[in-house]
Image (cartoon, rainbow, N blue to C red; front, side, top):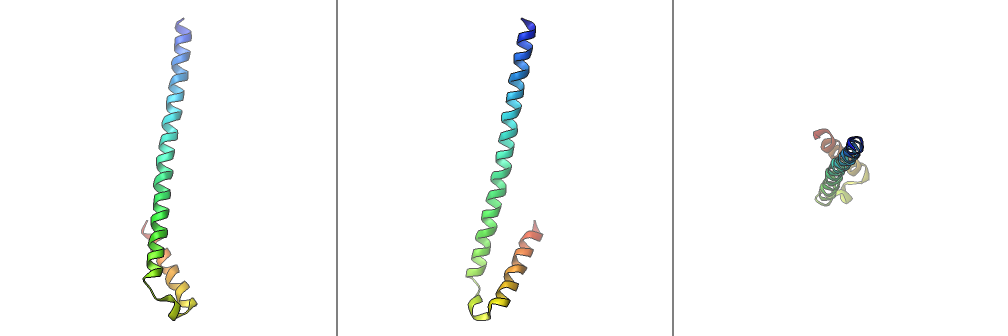
Length: 75
């Protein structure tokens, strides 16, 4: 009987650790996804607040690249 209870305890402990690991993974992915959404929204705001259409496409791409590098570098 003790052997069965011990094995059951190990199984339940393993299941508990598995659930905990999934929870940690979910929280990490959720934070990363929220950060990506924030970065995207910041980039959209940046583009909306600058008059890229009059300055030309080349300069626009350059400015956006600088901004993306700055955001990525600050992490």
